[in-house]
Structures are given as structure tokens and as C-alpha cells.
Image (cartoon, rainbow, N blue to C red):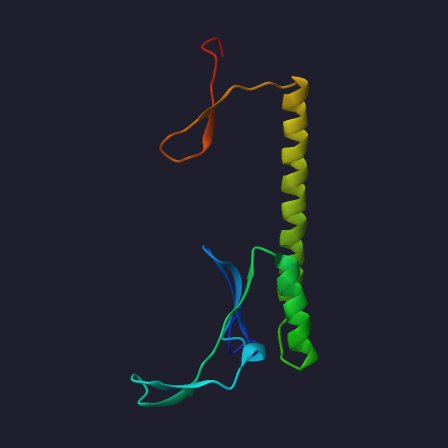
Length: 128
């Protein structure tokens, strides 16, 4: 999923399944390094990605740096990242409450590890 792409913004920010949120070929990381490209048959600048991982706050801070040097990034990118931060907080809160309930013996559910998908599933009593 992309937050913004070249053409609609001065940067391309996307969410990578393995590495988290990435600012692709980030102009803030331009080192002036040049390499020869066999594909283009010319020397081209070496571009580096900024990888925030799964830290949305880190990407928000990075976006501030872009705007400081007048790179255009739509404001809805910030809004989407902030919404995701709030969703993560709510999920963490719900998980904490469920864990506390289990530790107190309330709403006890037997869980079994599923060897095929690595997740867990609820063991239902035959009476249910």
C-alpha cells in the first residue's frame, strides 16, 4: 500500500510487508554518489531508501524533514499515519485488557497453537 507516489508528491512512501514504511529513493539521503548503469548506459546517482520500519512516528518525523526543505507531501499522509497509530493503540489496549481478564481467570478460554498457520484457535467444549 502506498501513502503517496511520485507525480502526486515529491516522494514515494509505501508500506512494505517485510521492512515496514519506506520513503523510496529519498532525496534527503542523496550522498552525491554516482555509479555506472548498464541498463541506462550512463552514470546515474545512487539513491537510498529511508526505512522507518513499523515506527509510524519515525515516518511522521521524516515527513517533517521533507517539508522543511519544501518537498510536497499531501497532508492526508500524516492523517493516515496518525489514524494507524490510534488503531494500534486501541488494539494494544484491547489485548492488554484481554490478557488481564485471563490472568484474573475471567472469561477463560482454552487456546491451542495451530501448527499449520502459527496462530491460535479457541478450543470449544462439546457442550457448546
